[in-house]
Each structure stands twice: as C-alpha cells, then as structure tokens.
Length: 292
Image 1: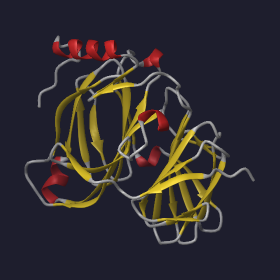
Image 2: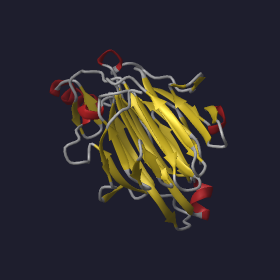
Image 3: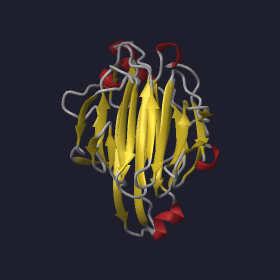
Image 4: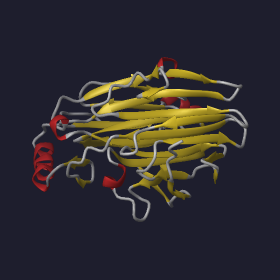
C-alpha cells in the first residue's frame, strides 16, 4: 500500500489571546519552518484547546474586525459562540457544529460566547481554520454556511471502531455538506479504543491532522492529545488508531492553489497592491457596517 510518510509531529505552540475570549495555539503558520504556502489552501490553524470559562453576564470574544480574500471555518468541540457579520449573516455555533464563512470581497464580523452559555460558563474548545480562496473567487460575494452537526455526513466504521464525521469532501461514499471553492476534505474521526480508520488523499494534496481529544497511532507513530501531524507530499494512504477512549481527530487535506499568497493581518490576497486596496476599501466603508 502506498502509505503517506509523516513529515513531523509537533506539540502545541505557546498560547496567545484572540480578543478576550479565545486562548489559542497557532499551528499554521506558527510552527517554525511551516509557512502558509506549505499547507495551502489551509493558511491558518488556531486551536483553542480545552479550557474552563467562568460564568459571566458579559460574553467575551472578539469585537468587530474585517476579513477579505479567504474563508474562516469554525469547528466547535465544546461551548457555544454567536456570530454576526456585515453581510447580514449570523447564528450560534454549538458543540459539534461548524460555521463556514466566506469573507471573499470583504466583511466585518464579530464573535462572542453565546449569552446564555456565557452566563453558565463551562468547557470551551474550538478550532478556527482559514482556507484560501482562488484568485478568481477572492472578490466574489461574501457567503455563510451554517453546518449543524446533524447535517454532516457520517460513515460508521466496522468493528465498533467509531465513525467519521464528514464536513467537506468525501469519505468512502459519504459526502460532507460544505461547499468549497477548491478541492478540500475536512472531517472528524471519532474513535473508540482500538478503533481504526484509513484515509486516502492524492499525494500532491497538503494533508495534516490534529488530535483534539485522546491519543492515536498515526501510521504506527504515537501522537498525543493536542498534537499536530503534517504528512509529506508522498504516498496517499494513512491510518489513525485510537489508543484512548473517546478519541477525536480532525483530518484536513486540500489541493494546493499554487497562487501567490500575500497576507497582512485580516487580509489574504495575491499581491501587495491588493492588500493596500483592501485597506483603502475598508476605510471607505466598502465592507459594510456592523455595530460592536
């Protein structure tokens, strides 16, 4: 079998706060030597590992800020976040759900703990992934996909191994509900002890995984909780085997766009001139209006 080789396994990087609500480890592009182009079309991965949030009547989070040129994918493992944006979209992302926001030509948005959840407090754990848009789609109309957990594809693994939750792409014959602008697979393997799942992606695709809960053997290599694995662009197949109960593994694989990436803060475009234009458009109110 044409197995993928593991390029590296890495522990969580130092945390930093995004706003006053999200305490994140940055894996992409925060790992030394790993740049945006190395995981294209995945250009950012922030991971808020499990933390306890104390009850508060004032929800914490991130105030109004702009984005252009890419998509934000928020995956909720524990807790609830409420989203609003200047395109008129909004909603609550609860445990098990995913929100896929296409910033494209530009939106303002804000994210805070959902009010009732904030009043109660509890365990909070989420991933935010940025997926790059092809040049042809960077200035398209912004979009929003709410993906409740019950709408995701589900492939039950044999032998009481668990199941694979498909957000985008396909696992065997099960498809995920997310619409993507380039070939992207995004899924959660939820495994019982000893449960095993096999994945196969083209060797040219950039592929990685994050152990969200529990621990695994990835191609027989030990990977503990909260660790990130990047695969080489060689081979197609890899296996994930749970070594603890209730193991959850986020799997991502995508076809590289092979286009220039110029990033500055909340904007990801193809040229420096387009970044400057984004700031000019923002200053002239072309991203709309959103009250903080």
